[in-house]
Image 1 (spheres, helix red, strand yellow):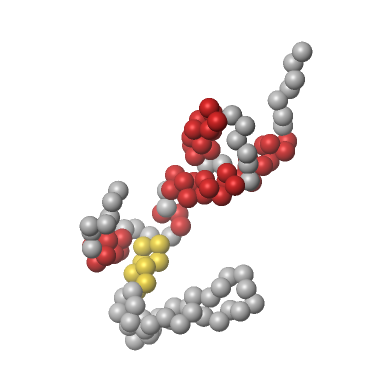
Image 2 (tube, one colour):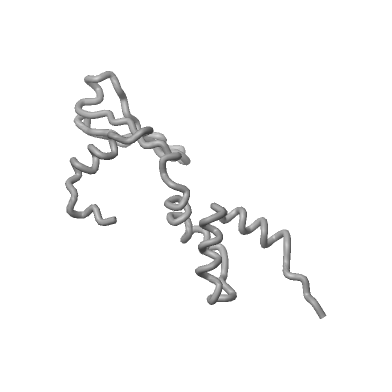
Length: 119
C-alpha cells in the first residue's frame, strides 16, 4: 500500500480511530501528561528533549499483525543462517511466516535434530 499521497493528518486521524490506539494531542503538559523517551539499555538514561507541542500516538504491539512482525524480522532471522538449498528458500520463508517461528526457534530445531543418513 502506498501512503505517499495521503496527508499525515489523514493517516493520524485513521490511526486514532482504531481500537488499541491512544492519541495525546496539543500541549501534553497542559493536559497533565508527561512523555519521556529514554535509552532502554544504557547507563545514560537522560530523557530526549521533546517539544511540549506534540502529538503522541500509543499503539499496542498486539495490533501489528504476526505477518508484519515476521516480515520485519526476516532479515534478522536470516543473518544467523546460511541457505544450503536456494530452491527451497521461498518455501522455507513461507513456513517460517505461517508458523511464526523466531530465530531462536530455528536455532533450537537445528541444534536438536539432523537428517538421518540412510545406507
